[in-house]
Length: 83
Image (cartoon, rainbow, N blue to C red):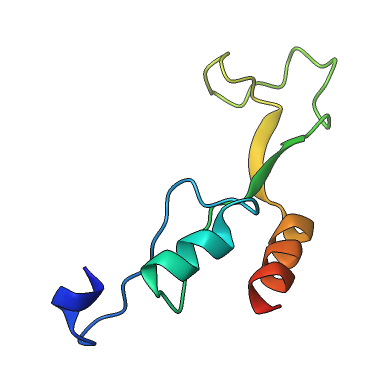
């Protein structure tokens, strides 16, 4: 893809890039940038125990949990690839 793009667009490898394989992906693809989705599950207990509060969502996954970017792990990844 990088050869085909010939510098006209930036190709970002993604999907499944984790700390254990990021440097290998960068080395093998020659990419200057990578795409990451590093998140953690966060619990919001603000409505816990109050059956009158309903967010209108499905019961699975539970309404009191959501995905959020994991700043700590993103920072670790930045240090890793910049070393």
